[in-house]
Length: 314
Image (tube, rainbow, N blue to C red; front, top):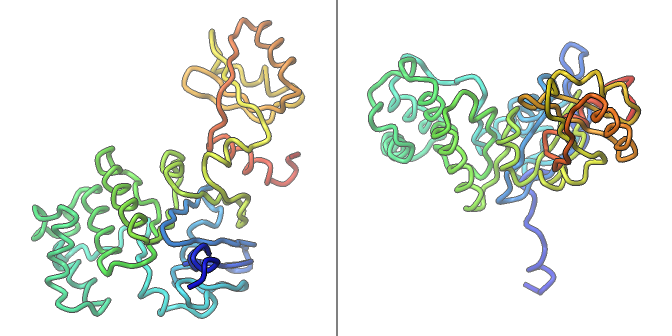
């Protein structure tokens, strides 16, 4: 292998262009182009109905796109279907377990579906790896939400996939369980695997290698979380003192204010730099304090989604 080959990036696990999907003539995915490489964790972020789950289901081979091109794990995204589904570890947001089966039975069944040698042995190994031993003989319907979520993750990863797709993997989990999920995601990525997560939680999104911001079936931006926040074309300010959290109308009326939203007992203001003098005057007149703040991923997502809406000026 020559020097140029050694420096080339690894082949993409996912590379798709212009994916589109409609249901009953209603667009769910309009134009989605994405790449994912080994070792990356890509977060899908955006409001409900933005197209995130539909895109994930297309990539997992569970839905056929109406248009587009590309590949997932070397399979044509337009014809992958079952072939892709057997290679991907997919965890839906809703629990997809057999409630009348025990933890062991659920995992043994999943191992058998993937035609793994000695399904019982594989299931027992997963129970140990995911600390499910105390619940081995318990039916899935009797598990608490956190333990059911852990069982579902174990089932999704039981065949050691190169690519995992996890829809809201930390939803409803306590802090310890969330950390456990992220430890497993990090271990998979460190081993050269790839992960796509769908999340509403910006704290989760900030742990991803890259983030894709979705709205109305479109990918508005893709990049590293810090780069997306720092590169956003606005300035962030925090207004405090008095009834700051209720002062949004005071600032929303000013030219150059892009958005305001409550941050605890304070108000966060996102604005163009040329609006700063007017904002400072308005804050002083209202007896409120004003301080600079670093741009956050939440800010960038909020503004990009808002500006993508019809009739909203950029």
